[in-house]
Image 1 (cartoon, rainbow, N blue to C red):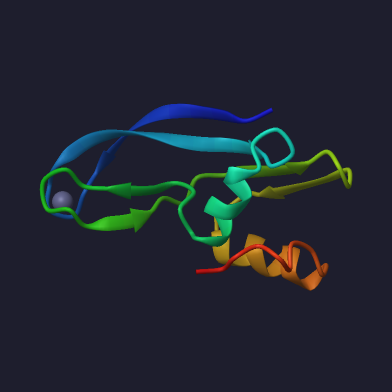
Image 2 (spheres, protein in one colour):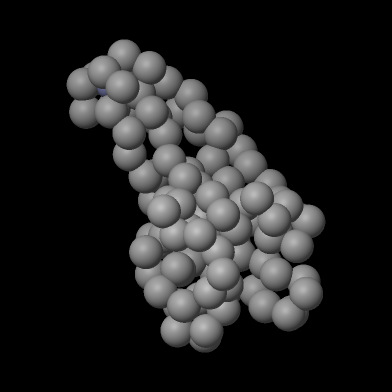
Length: 97
Ligand SMILES: [Zn+2]
């Protein structure tokens, strides 16, 4: 199941704003999330004041029911998660940019 929660964040500029962060993504039920993951769009937030974008390090569960794969990224580091998937030879056809 894909789930999110609302979180209050503080930008470097001092602006406090709310954003919905993914806690888990199910790429079988929501294939677009796979594209978003490889595009580094998951848990990317944008400050409404200074417009600076940043990737929030929120723990994330990755779930693909088709191949029965579940990975947990405890530190929410998307690069490591993507590298892990690539090392498994998965999702080679997903557009990466
Ligand atoms: Zn800001």
